[in-house]
Image (tube, rainbow, N blue to C red):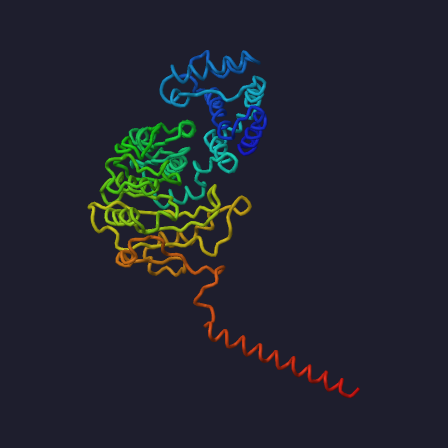
Length: 472
């Protein structure tokens, strides 16, 4: 049994809990509590869990006794355990009311083919479960999950290196940092090319994040642990003053949540020059301010179209970004690749300068949206769709690239447009261009001429009929 089959079996167990009124997201959280114990046993890493609260004790119980013991276990690990275990179980409580349902889930998990799961990687299994949850529209979890293919492309082009500090200030389930770690491992023979100190840095210091939602933070901790990453993942709000300490990074990779602050209030950060109620604009400010000013610290950020429009706070923040950073590339993404079909998104790639002035000379735009097929479950986005963009992005001489989707605007041109960044879209073949319409006067005259010709033909037929009738 491979990981994909195990994920399907685990996901189908959710049907058991429908009578308990449990949501998909609650189910994944509940699975996390249980899988942590089982995976600890399978990998012999449950030494930090008190012996009387380990998997073997849980699987012995039945019925009401099981439910009582399970709730006691959650409470004990959340209050008395240490380190990552305590973080994962902090505030944990079960949403399963029916003891028989809890028993069925635990028995089913115990009977899975864990040997095969370990061969493929328990981290990969858990990521598969998170992806399954994100793809289920009813779960509402898509907002915490960026498509794997997009994450991998962003990581590849930002090119994180050993020894660099990477961060995701809105980390969701920690997908970007796990992909960055995997990328570096692939480049360094699973870190064996690094010294012991460098390996320690990669495990404990290289990858950090911050997540606002408690249950999602729990999933991020579990995901990091299963990938042997032990960097700090803060439970908190990056846009509050707590986020002021998130700085000094070499690489930022992120997809901030869409929407505005509740009630339309502005961010509570007192260090933002341009506070606004637009969360993405606030995240954008945070990100470019959090990069080291060494000329090579860089970021790739997913942002919706509304962030690119020039208006009020947006104009000022665009200008500030282009002063402090070299905003070298904007990728206009296809629609339909995120949980909300209508959301139009982009990826901004920029590098922080050594000074705070005049870093952007020109911005290249790549339109991967216009005249593209509709993406979704039946037609998923894949690596091949990005090949031409990657060629253009990595070209030594971008001006030599012959691709109608790739265009450039100078800093002066952008300034003339009030620093708006909603640029670079090519002609949409599905939309009738007004410039292609015939001149209305010419068109009217042509219609009149055709009507007159038709009238003449009708009159000739009438005359012919009259002449035939006149012979009678």
